[in-house]
Amino acid sequence: MPISHLPDRAVIEITGEDRVPFLQGLVSNDVTQAAPGHAVWAALLTPQGKWLADFLILADGGRLLLDAEAAGAAAVVQRLSRFRLRSRVALAVTPLSVAAAWGGTAPPTGLPEGALAVPDPRLPEAGWRLLSPTPVAADADFADWDRHRLALGLPDGARDLDAEKSVLLEAGFDELHGISWTKGCYMGQELTARTRYRGLVKRRLVPVEVAGPLPPRGTPLLRDGREVGEMRSGRDGLGLALMRVEALDGPARAAGEAGDSVLTPRVPGWMRLPERAPA
Picture 1 (spheres, rainbow, N blue to C red):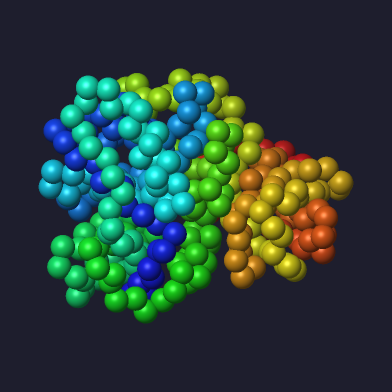
Picture 2 (cartoon, rainbow, N blue to C red; picture 1 turned 90 degrees about the horizontal axis):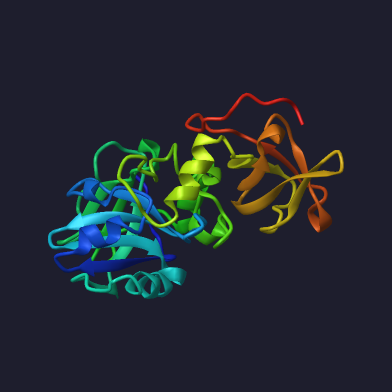
């Protein structure tokens, strides 16, 4: 079972007796479902329902642990802290390290004392998330994990989503178990629900195979001279691209300096799409 450190991740700790109801009213998923051995994937949204951050939520005794992007962890703490009001909670970034393991149905053995291992709640194929007070022994590097993630079509925070612009349903949060439709109100819920029930999702973040140089993030993708998508993260001939639903039936070409690159969508089996006509 490959194990890779995830140096781009950090862990936010939320303690205090109000930690669960406090977070429950702010994020897209049901925080009460976080329990020993079961993590929850959730997003923090603007009041207008646009993505700000996402994280895996783990329960560990008297605290919640948020496995989040390291680059945005301090900003998440600051933003969540604005909503504390009279809630009895404390928030801080902790020194826990984060790793991923995949390719097996049982958690890896030989973990450091105090380490937590939980199945990734998005897809069984995503493997296990490991949080540990000391780094776990790794036999793979970040690039190995990144290729695995890209092939599965899992978004990776700001590498694939745009703060205050991206909509959760474009990025697979519904199919990947990142939204609760029954928990009640949370910040940004109204737009998220309206997008679902009115069928307003016109673009999807999908895996693409890249023939040619890997286009930089933000590169427009064209078909017959018309823009049908935009490149997001990628590595070694694999990538994610935000593409119009009607353009997922065939390849597109990168614009600009990467114009020799052809990107072919590979819609994953977990993704639910409406019937579509060719672009």
